[in-house]
Image 1 (cartoon, one colour):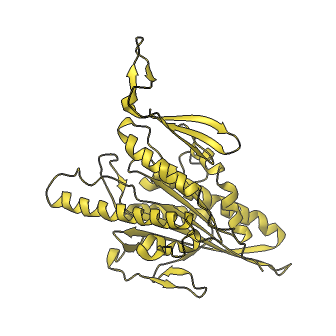
Image 2: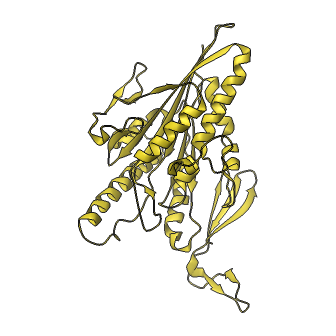
Image 3: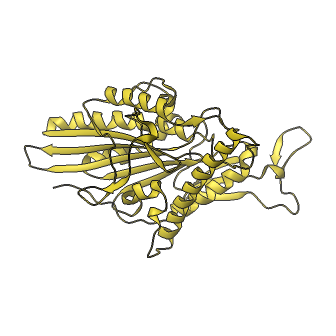
Length: 348
C-alpha cells in the first residue's frame, strides 16, 4: 500500500504518509520496504483532523460525525461531503449497501453515513419527545448529472423535469420542483434511499464496476417545537456523495467513449469549481465563485459560514492511484485550512 498512518501529531491532528511506489523495492528477504532512492522525492506527509485506517468499520466512521448529526435537533445546519477519486469508496461510505439495494436498517453492519444519520435523528427525536418536543422531518434527494438536476425521489421524468435553482423565503438557494417528503420514521426513509439508489446515474469505470457518475445531495430538514416551553428550532442535515474524479484521456474511441469523456469532463469541471470556491474562501477573497457550478451554488449556505461543515476525503491505497491520492490529500489540506465562520443555531 502507498498509505501509511502515523498516529497522533500533537497538537495538530493525525499524520498520513503517501509513498511514491517507484521508491519501493524488494530487499533480500522479499519484504517490500519503502526506501529513499537517489534523485526521487521523499514520501509526502500530511496532517489532518483525523485519519481512519482501511479496516475502520462503518460504525466507527459514523461515530466521528455522530455529534454533528445530533446537533441538527438543536437547530444547526450540518453538511458532510465525501470527496475522492473514482473507486475510492465514497458511495460506500455515504450509503453502504443501500447503494446496491441492500439492507440499510439500524443493525446493518455495512450501513453508511446516510442511513445511520437517519436512524440517529429519529432516535434522538423520540428521546426528546419525553421533554415535550415534537418534530416534523422532511427529506429530499437530488442528483446533479452533467449540470442538470434529477429528483431521485421522483424519477418519472428523469432529466426532463424542469428544475432550477431559485431562492426560498429565507433567501437561500433552493431547487424548484424538488419533492420534499415528510417522513414519520426511519424505515420510510430507508425505502426511499433504496429507490433513489436505483435511479442514480452509474456506469463501469477502470476503477469501479459500478461508479457513481453524478453528485448526490441528500437533505433532511427538521422543524421542532416544544409546547411546554414555547421553544422552536429549525435544523438541516445535508450529506453529499460527490462524483469521483477520473482522467478522461483513457477511454479510447467511439460514441460510447465520447459520451463517457464528456461525462467525466463535466464531473472534473464541477470538482474544479468546488476547488476554486475553497481557494477563494481560504484566501478570504471578496468574490467567491459559488455560481460557477450547480453544486457550489446549491451548497452556498454550507460553504459560506453559519453551518457545521465537514469533508471526508477517501483515498485509495492502490499503487496505481498514487498521483490521484496525492492530489486529493493536497486538496484536503487546503480544505482543512479554510475557515468559513462560526456555525449559528436557528432557535427561538
